[in-house]
Amino acid sequence: MSTSNFIAKLLRWFDQNQRYLPWRLTNDPYAVWLSEIIMQQTRISQGTAYWERFMETYPTVEDLAAASEDDVLKLWQGLGYYSRARNLHKAAQQIVALGHFPDTMEGLLQLRGVGEYTAAAIASFAFGQPTAAVDGNYFRVLSRVYGIDTPINSTEGKHEFQALADSLGKDYRTINAAIMDFGALQCTPKSPACIVCPLVEDCIALREGRVDLLPVKLKTVHQKTRHLVYLYLRCQGKVAIRRRGKGDIWQGLWEPVLIEQTPSDDKTVTSSTAKQLLAHASLLRSNVKHILTHQILLADFYLSETSSRPAIPPDYVWIDEQNLDQYAIPRLIEILFEALPAPNNHLNE
Image (cartoon, rainbow, N blue to C red):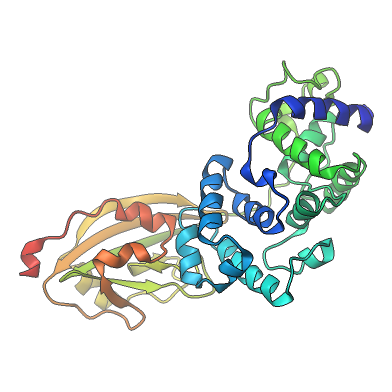
């Protein structure tokens, strides 16, 4: 099928089926950039609410740049992949220091957290540049329509798909949006609506019975399993928490006392201290599973309520429990906290 025929059918479909996405109503580069960062590895239904909250809290890039990292992480809480939030904050500061929002691919790629796809999306949606923003939807739609089985995460595949995407036309503000919606609504990863697809007569994958086999992706991710044991120390209206450091997951976020983790590749409470802290603790949750891109986490969660403060490691601090919701925490910790009972007021007397 010729690219002109493909685009003509695609745009007719888009005209009738395009999604309402609030950031498409503007060409403000800040709003567009914010949407692209938030929507990475995030469902539209979930990400839209976050985009709206960010736009309300930080209506300009200057407002975001002036915010504290803690406030940004707190507003981001629940989205996961917190490095995106930290990069978002640093990029906002880069933009303010520059004095304007970069309007070229080269300039956009200098921003923290902005790769080829994100730069192309901002360039096309905010500045009308003829750049194909090749994402998972592009790979899926093009691989099926044209029957391409070159692995999408190989160097050869990336070049092949980018070249094909670059040949589709000039109005990439519309083409990019159309392929994103077509991949999200019609040519979905599982159970695509092939019977009512406008490309039903042209799709090579459908004709050859390979829809479920495309696109091809080489398996490269190896997940390791870690077992975490957390203790919620509650004393006289206070709770002990610490901020996680660099070099591991959840950098800059807060967590309760980490008794141990296996494999042990981080400083945790010593075994003797751990035994003392767990001596009178109650197990609230066991083997809570939480899956990250490269890791599978299994967590046990204990509660210890005491009338006098036990010794805790120096990197932990006591805070008012009523202020705990002001601290950004990982999603796993948020899930564990759902098991917490109300404080035992007798211990506070």
